[in-house]
Image (cartoon, rainbow, N blue to C red; front, side, top):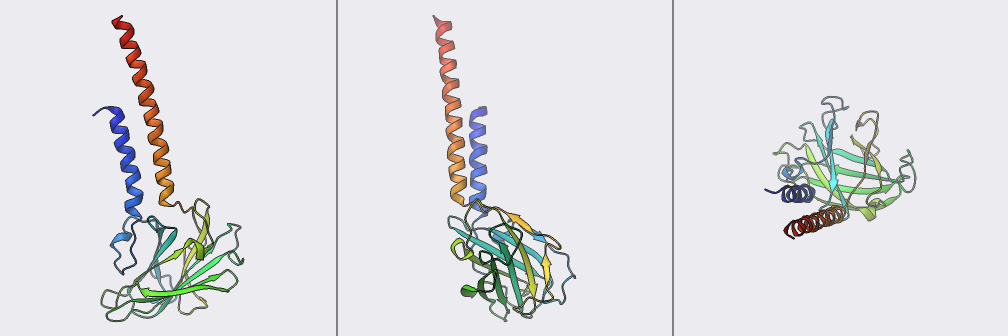
Amino acid sequence: MRPGWALALTLLLMLALPATALAIGLDGNFDDWNGQPNIPDPVGDGPTNNTDLTAFYWTMGAGEDSVYFMFERTSANGPVHFAVDIDCNNNGSFGDAEDRRVIAFYQPANNEGPVFVSVQNGQGGSITGFSGNWGETKRQGGSRAELGVSFADLGIDGHLPVNMVAMAGQNAGLGNTDSSPDGGTITWTPIPVLGWVILGAGMLAIIGIVWYRRGRFTWGATSSSAS
C-alpha cells in the first residue's frame, strides 16, 4: 500500500471511531458504554451500599447536541439519588444561576428500572424534568442507570470546557453523599460529532493538496528527463 493511501485510511479510521463510540441509546442496555470516558470510584467508600458510587461515565450523543451520563454503584436494590453538578461557566463555582445540577432518582423494580430526572440551575431553580426506563432491574443487579440531557437544558455549548462532579446520595438533598472524583472535578470539553467531520474534511483537503503538488513535481521531473 502506498504511504499516501495508508495515511488516508488511518485518518478515516480515526474519524470513524468517535462516531461509533458515541452511539449511545437510552434503553437500559449498557454494552454501548464500553470504551466511553469514565472515572472509577473506590468500592466501599459510600455511606451505604445503595449510595456507594463505583463509576461515572459521560459522553456526547451521536449526531445531536446532548450529553449522556451513566452511573454505577455497588450491587444494591434500594433507591438512590444520582446527581452531577456542572460548572457551566467554568469559574470554579457550582452555585451560579448559569450552572446545573442533574438529579436522577433511581429505584429498580423486579422487571424495570425507572429513572426520574430533574434538571436544576445552580441555585435550585427548576429547569425541566423527564423520566424513562433507563436503569437495570433488580434481577439484573440494580446497579446502573443512564440518562441524557440536551445542551439547551444544560445551558452549555460545544467546544467549551466544563467542570463536573458526580454524586450518589440517599435523598434529593444529597447530604452525606459519595462523590466522584474524590476531592476534585472532571474537566471535559464536549465536541459534537460535526466537529470531527469538519476536522476530517480539513485534513483530507490538506492530504489532497500534498498529493497534487507531489504529483505535479513528479510529472514535471519526468517530463524534463524525457526531453
